Image 1 (cartoon, helix red, strand yellow):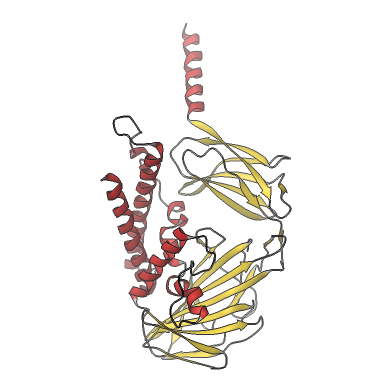
Image 2 (cartoon, helix red, strand yellow; image 1 turned 90 degrees about the vertical axis):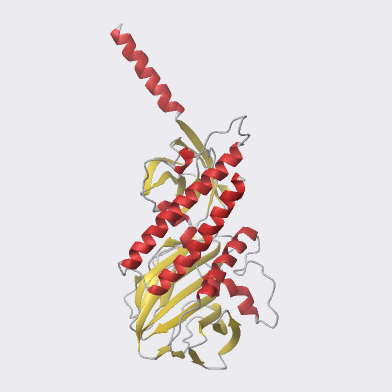
Length: 421
């Protein structure tokens, strides 16, 4: 009798465990040749404290795969590795399918060109701070990914000290990705894939400043536009046959050099002191959010109407000039990926749909996502204030991230209140 009870208990435990798990299936397609991609590593990642591997398999001869997805209320991510390049697909709670496209990779791919190199400069007594954003476009035919130990190379000014660096693939959120020294002075390279579509790199650094500074950037990838922006209180001096005035926007003076070939060394200088206005940072974050939600226009400006008498470069890169990637980072995937484990998931706090409440599964999922985002932003805000008090980030980076978080949290709270009304 006792042994029978044990067998029944074991069966119940096994049944309960299996009922809490589901399978997530999908197909990996090689878009370089439009055929199924066989033999690729497929990994299910749990987004908790870092990224924890939850399951692993390989795509079969037809490109298909199946992974066990535990119903633990956690956020998950499916990662496929093809020819050394990783491709990701979010798998939130309830996901049962995840089809993923991959591309063949090469060290040098024809069709990879630079759209813009955008530098935002500000200076205080004794120190200059620069945030530089690079926008690359991969229009290779057939589509391929460029990946090597020198996928994208840059140079930094003499005496520059890196503070942070981000990278974002096509349609992806920014992730921390630091360039590595190449062995040549002030020369660095990103080990990050440049997939078909638009890839962005952003690096922030500071350098000693005595009231003026000479820049001599080496343009290693052909750029449609090199843009320099600085507070109106500062002065710009450059070759007028190379740089043209790009107008003024939110207290920022903008200068543009068009069609800069690879190997060209530019030369310009800045003088004076001044901070990037906070309203420019906030407007940049707001416009980035609008352009992301209103796509499909693929230009960095998100398809905004052309400002009167504004040069094309100012129009095309207006909001990247103001906002860069920092606003996206503040509310993006890195917030979720780096969150600390909590005693209870915000998803668990959302009541199940029932006839009395009239709430549909879609409404429940939307509420769960809002709760998750708010909790993540609260943690990020706490960490930001801690880092600021400990002097781990510069005042400029603190102000920019704080403005982005404040605005986004306000909008999320407004949406939550509207949903409850």
